[in-house]
Amino acid sequence: MVVGRLGMNGPIGKTFVMIGLLCVLSFLPLTLDKGWAQVSTTETSGLPNQEGRTEEPSYPVRKVMVFFRTEGMGSEESTIFYDSLVIFLQGNPYNKRIVEGLPITGPDSLNERASVSFRRACDSWFLVQVKKQADAIEVSYQLYDIPYESYRAEAKYATEFPSARDRSTFFWKPIREALRELPPLPKDPVFTLRGIPGTRVFGLPGGVKELNAKGIATFAAPTPATYTFRAEKLGYEPFEQQVLLKEKGGDILLVQRRGTLLNLDFSLLNGQFPAFYMGFFPIPNTLFLKLGLTSFFSGIGPFLANDAKFEPFVSYPLMTVDLQMGGYLSSSDATVRVYVGAGVFLRVFYSDLRTMLDPVLPFGGYPLIGVEYAPKRGNSVFFEYTPRIILLDTQTKGSVPMESYLQTAFFKDSLISGTSVEELFWLELISFRLGYRVRL
Image 1 (cartoon, one colour):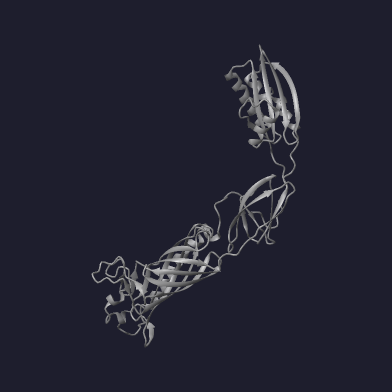
Image 2 (image 1 turned 90 degrees about the vertical axis):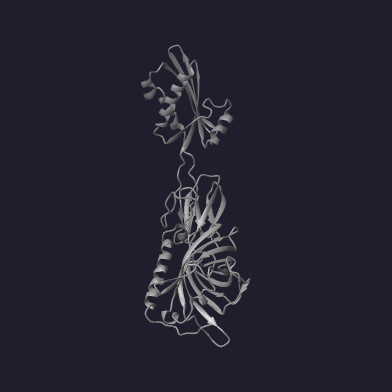
């Protein structure tokens, strides 16, 4: 091993400028990606509640299913009358929603008509019967209120055969006016979410909810009903929960758990040399700082090398000390998570006599792109790509053969593994880690 002095003049300023630029570029996606704020795609519509605003109970819109029967008419004529009825009813000023019957004629019994209507989320139904006799028309109708189990309107009237204009103006008017007899349903009860301030909740009626400074958000919802919602808060584990909402309202307590604060990485650099990293999360599950150590003292031989002197195990008196900073672009409960960042490192030679910085390639930096796979939201396997830019000490390089510094490269005799850049830097494109990550 050749020992020289570390030259620190000339290229040092340029080195730090380039490393700093790499770090800035690596963090640009963090401010743009949804995963940085842990925003789920479960529900994208709706706006969060304003802080301190209380949700007021609301009257649900009444939905009326229309069944239609005719006597003495052909199918085409029946269709014309039915279409004109539905169109006329849909224009009612009483905030009643009209739903076409399926089937149009409807079942024969009262309970069956109520069942069909209920399956289409309707709370009442009309049965309209039209009987044609020569040039006269007889119309009878019934309006049934399912929640109150009572008929709200029943009547019959007869007129001359209506023209198209009559059907669109006054012929169906008595039936439309009968909608006034449907009283409003009881107001939807109000429920209160309680948890950590700033938590966003998706999947409940009324759009996205955000807990205010007191950790409270309210919403009104039709009941009884079962809802599945998702809660997210930066620094906490996201979770999904199913809740049964009953008629009287009440509180929903969000049981939230803080995200990962520490993790340990056990990996192989380039699939050969063991590395150990400890990570700390200033923002749990999202932003991390890592300190790592890679030892080249005992490693696996380069399994893709085409070398007649290939050895299954290799050893070099070298280690690297790394410092990484980065952040995740995916939610912490995702099975596959992507993260980016940047790192700097020192190359350290050691022997029985002394320990020193590598005199030729002392330190450098790299962007970091990683993917981890965690099928059960726990420990994970990961892959990191870390193309490295290493300072090249030009004052020492002239007296040292570079081949002795390429022994740890993945392809030691290939340009894609390492190449000099303007005699200032050494660019190493093949640099990666495979490993196992333990969450603490």
